[in-house]
Length: 378
Ligand code: PMP
Ligand code: GLN
Image (cartoon, rainbow, N blue to C red):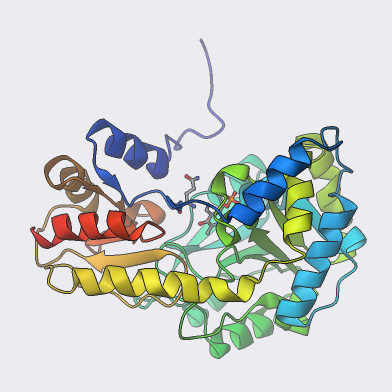
């Protein structure tokens, strides 16, 4: 067939590739980020109950009113931001759809969109499909933004800067200076908006997460994206939400209604009831125990662990083990040592390779123990 691809440079995502390899070689899967422990039984009981109720038809386009109210309360309690959820919130099929929808709604052909590398993989393709131009800018060695470099790339065509804090894959979180610099940048550039991917907002450890929600200047020019998948260990439910000023949200909803129209009604109903009792502020402590357990058990390995301030990912250097490329080393790790990880170069535009891998520690202790025993033998 004479088919000209709209995304000629896109293949299968690294998450699919590595998870498949983990299955094929019967390896422990610390690659794709998803928890392997049971969800809160309170949530599964609510879900089971909701499935017996009248919850099975289309939800309102922007979200179930009770869930929108729950989101409004969550943002008020966690960030002291008061929103009008009916006008400023949208329930989406995960953060991925929120990001895609926002880009289709706001990026015009020829607009530029800044992506900070290493970057999560769902940012670039929607920009290309919208006729926009992705401008990929490397983060500093410590995975924080190089503000001087960013400033030098912003011009009158720069429509969006996509930020991700806490950061996947590095596990680094933004500091006060980064928020101040972003604030200055949007004040100096009236066309520029922020797409703030904060899906790991409740998974931080020693340092506090600095959210766009808590900054008045930023939040008036930002779309903030969240994911119940990360917050409630339900990545397969694919339910998330985003908050944006009403005039942006009007445009975003125009796209949303033709992309999905509305999101899974039973899941929305269950989440709205669960939000009434759950305490998200404990999530960081929960994952800190797992991070520490993983790090302690890796202490005698030849891997060098980088700092991990948030998310459920630990980055490690294998420089002392091999000089193979990170992709080759990852493949050999699965085949010969029985552990799957993610190579960091796949998140970088020029695939530059610092010999770093990402391990997901959102796993049962037994899984982490078995994996670290294997990794310590290398
Ligand atoms: N952004 C980042 C940084 C992520 O790690 C993920 C992971 N899944 C997503 C967005 C997508 O989230 P969701 O599964 O809710 O679509
Ligand atoms: N966000 C997950 C990760 O970073 C992957 C989700 C997916 O497979 N699309 O591992």
